[in-house]
Image 1 (cartoon, rainbow, N blue to C red):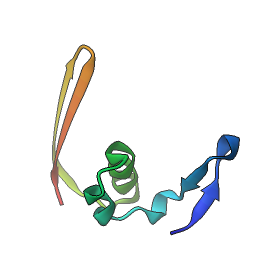
Image 2: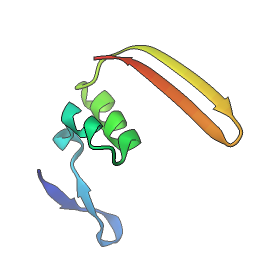
Image 3: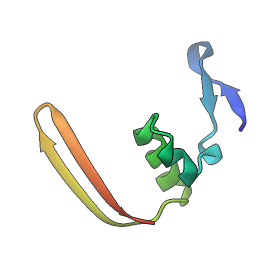
Image 4: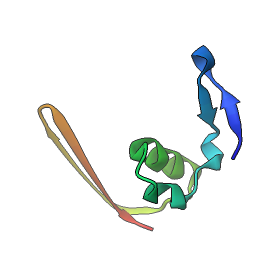
Length: 63
C-alpha cells in the first residue's frame, strides 16, 4: 500500500491502491466505493438513490 502526503500533512492512499477487499474492512466505505468505481474495479448493474432529509441512501448492485 502506497501512502502519499496530501493537503495539510494528512496521509492519503492513491486511488489505484484500493481493492474490492477494502469493502469488507468497514472504514470509509463511501471513499472505497468511489475509488473502485472510478478505477473500473467495481462494476455496477443497478443504482438506487433515495434522498430524505437529512440522509441520502445509495444502493449499488453489481460485481
